[in-house]
Length: 534
Image 1 (cartoon, rainbow, N blue to C red):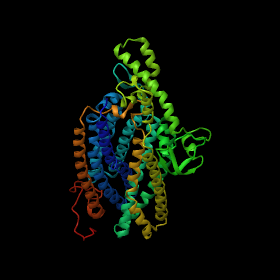
Image 2 (cartoon, one colour):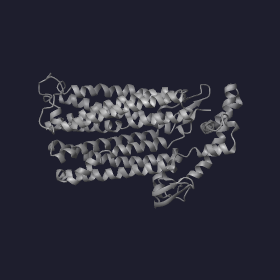
Image 3 (cartoon, helix red, strand yellow):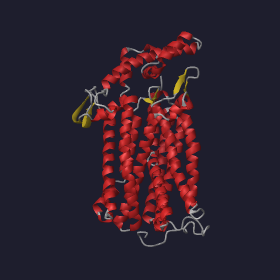
Image 4 (cartoon, rainbow, N blue to C red):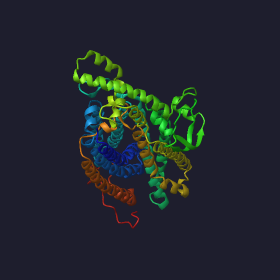
């Protein structure tokens, strides 16, 4: 029997490190593109203030980028230390996108970020602009390949189980690359990162306007952030809708749990705006519903049903029974790989092998499972409904609030009255943590919602762990808590420090392309200009 305590601890550790790492990823994505936009305006207009904007937001980007690298590397090692069987089982498929990410994206981004910081007085304006765009492209390519790997975990296409090697192997890399779930995740996650960068720029610019500092830089920054953020926030909603549609095809249980929909309703299904999930009685209390909306989102029609939890559990019982047959056929093949009858039988049932493996939670040999154990395995496919229900609604609520916030900012910026709307500037400043909260909730919905699968329909999570002790995992968790707490303190200190110092005091380099190379570096010590630093 698997060690479920080790599995739960390993899940908790990976969730902690992933959630912490994801604090830095969205801001890297958003700021990298905003930097490229700002420097493009500088190159086209020649106005120094746009260069100052690029430099100032660039140093905050650099701090965040360094933290993202430091926290992301540990996750790579966890696949080997905590999830060794998973890595062996799916490494031929899962490892390819991660390897490409390192070779194509990370090295590109890491190389050009050095040129971005140290090339202001060494490169021409066009040359430095090209470097900045390469940083932005590298950041987005990094997200692309990581999310292709994650999308395969949600929808394992282009691969097949090889009973001779006992591993998943690539059969069609093009299908892995153009996996519709992966593509939807890429554009949705990247757009959410753009929103994070825009909120970050807008909130700090609002802080400067409230303090009466760096007015021209803050006014232009908030204008760019408002227009860029509004387009990105609208894209998040549209692309999130596409993710809901794909979940209806590939992850029906996740969608049913998000809606706390216990039983299938007549088409088109309503969307539950509010309710209180009651897991014990398998119902949702105090429901407020929007007619037809879920059916339109999930099926793009008014005639197709969206299956409920109970119906999906009943269908899963049949797949578990088929999986038991597949497990039996696999044991025969392991005893005699030339057994033609077992090969033919396994070819018919192997698609349900993962469902049979769910029984390993309840018995050493799935072939000896009782009816009660089969039913328990089927109900184990239901994720935590209250967590899914409320996390999804909180994420969506924040998303629509951000659209309203960007729309108001765009209106005030277009009318050149933004600095006079002090009530709005306070709201914009207080809204700073919202995109991170929404991003983390989105991660919970996506990853927690596919439990108990580490690979949807293929490998249960509890079977993917390494052969290590619970004490080893506790030790590493304690080490990560201490390390990440220290990194968080450093990150906050540096961010606050350079925001308080302000752009003009942080940067001092000659105008690039002006024939003055080698001026002595990128940084100059802040001038002592008072307590406010400016």
